[in-house]
Structure formats: C-alpha cells, structure tokens
Length: 121
Image (spheres, rainbow, N blue to C red):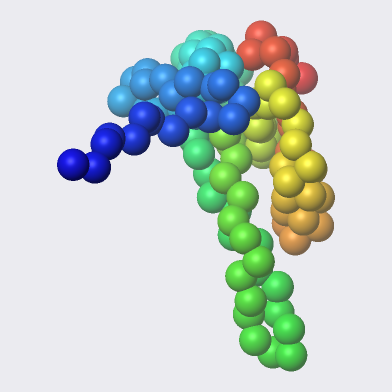
C-alpha cells in the first residue's frame, strides 16, 4: 500500500483563502480584496479585476516566444488611471525579475506592491 502524501505547504507559509467565491493565495491578498471592494462600492475605484494574466512574449527573428506569464493580484481604475497591484509578504528575486519584465513589455504599466492590505497608494 502506498502511503498518502501530506498536502504540500507553501514555502512562505501562506494559506489559501476563499472569499466571494474567489480563491486567494494568502490571507493578505484576501484582506486587500475586501478593502478594494469597499473602495469600489464607494465609487473611489472602478473595474476591479482579480488574478489578471500578463503574458510575457517577445519576438525573436519574427517568431513570438512566450517567456513566462505574470498574474497580478488586482487591476482597477482610479481617477481614470489603470492600477495594477500585487500583495506581497515576501518579495522574491523571481517576482522582482517578473515585475521588471512586465513593466518593460507593457509600456506605461507600473506594478504597485502592497505589503499592508490597508495601504492606499
């Protein structure tokens, strides 16, 4: 008989949380979502989106090559400007590299890093 594996733990000890029918990767991300929903209900932001995919594709010798994909936690509009947010308890080297790549491939886009869900940039 093969023993069952224990559920895989996140290496940063983040726990997945479900809220509003959406599964968030951490309590921090879910807390930020709740705050952004309140801002949307108050009319301070619009078009709130969750887990937005940004494919990182470059063209080499006329051929498109997908390097990776970056999934932002949130995207919304505030004062007519598009805001892209990522909640982070720990900023890894991989995240830092992907952030730079996405900002280079999507001119004008700046990813806002939120460490405290109550931050309002």
